[in-house]
Length: 579
Image (cartoon, rainbow, N blue to C red; front, side, top):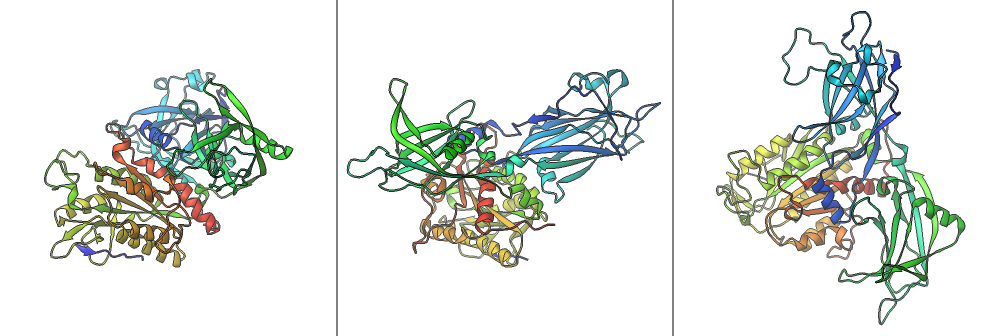
């Protein structure tokens, strides 16, 4: 095993069957229930964008005898188990082998999930052309061809356009005629996804909840969901001993709250260090309501629920001192301008994982092909991130083991090289991981500092070279870290770099210290020298907290990545550069 090294180096046709609407919505995307449950339980809702897909085709097969084909697009959502569910039908374009459809497919882009779609084209028989598209029986129409791709493959193109070769249906024997034409798909982000609202809140005459001092108030803004408890989307800082607080600006986007008219709950609470905060009062208003409140210059009284189920109106009031809307660059716009996400992984090889040759080990490689927890984390995160990295060469390290004829290493190259750390693709990580299990001796202790510093060095060198890359380090571990302060120091230093760190805890260890590293659970990290992290770059999840049978939940980690990416871009005032 090597040391921990880096090597940065046609015209539209006539339209028939226009009984449908101008767009079709599939806002549920492809999220799964376990991820949704995890996010809601932690008070986080993923950042998403509204996407419109437009369709055109060229050189289609002509299936009609006396005229050209009359094509229609049907879109299916493809799940991990290969099951299909129909989510969209276009209108029928008459007599065209190069149709441009008007009807758009509107959906929510979720960064944290792999959203795969199957596109099928049909030639609609003349006798059905006056029927609404939704009522057409597809087995009565002539199949023209199909293609599959992930939504991320489209939106990572600089033009947000992809051209797919149409093929025969899977499972059908090939015919002598191989030509089926091409389907062109263009993605456009909704303007609503780009609007950010800056709000300055102020309160007056708050009630004191503390015996010997004034309240330490802060606000939490939550959106109301159809089923379940409200989901927090933003919060202010805590202001000590203040009954008439004016907080720093909050930034809310339509992406976070749903729409400008979506109801929001704004809660004012007294901060307690034990986490049991005391509710001072709350109001329910939408962004539109808050804008009107700002324009009026008036306040609104807070209320407090009583034991009888009623709301007691308080003399305390909430004011909106500032309400401005701006259009800011979005995550997808940065991707389109050439920014990439680069995946890195670090794997825990400490002895607490157990002997890899025994079935009860967390590192056991099952001959049946069933993935262990480490393999699952690599695949689940990697399969999403790989589309955002053009060269698909990923730095991969191990830590906490003794390579052959070497002392214990807290950062060694997973591929065994002494000079470079990169492997080819997700399969390269999996192969190197399996090989390393038979070429190192598991040891300890569990140290994060060395691998974080190695990732930070690559990110720093890339930044110095002007590269448009943002790095994502996945650390998979089974144990309690023994270098907590050193890890804090490394994270605070790395918070200024284009880097986010995802930590997956596997096994049954106590992961309380991991919660400290994740700033979602408390105040920002502070280094031993007193320096505070410029932003939150860590996201942690313990697999045991969110497992539901065989459903993958590691993707819950990815939900916050676009927000961390945008926070970095805005702190550094990064501009879009035309490709």
